[in-house]
Image 1 (tube, rainbow, N blue to C red):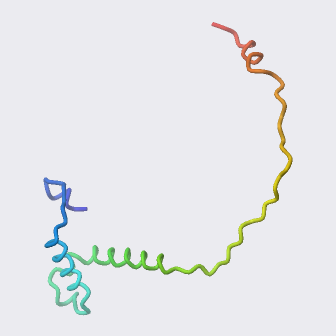
Image 2 (image 1 turned 45 degrees about the horizontal axis):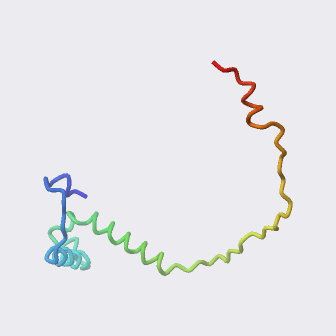
Image 3 (image 1 turned 90 degrees about the horizontal axis):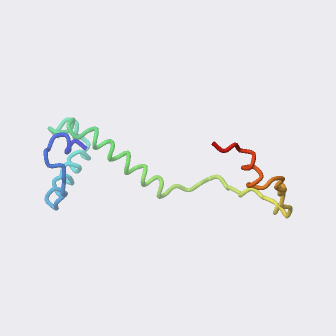
Length: 100
């Protein structure tokens, strides 16, 4: 998100080292005393809360059980076909148009 604004090279490859570093930051943020003890807490706070919210939403969607019993509406088969007869053909309609 900020990477393209700050860095000239817009490509970002997430290596194993980067993944481990991010996991260590998340582990520090999870600790109960993180707001007081972790130096970079305020730097990552907004992203961490956004991450937690997003993960919670995904888990909630996965485990969501609908309480409503939905019954599809009953539709009767319509056996009649309403067709309006053509009164004029296309040639007759265009014959009235003045040619320029």
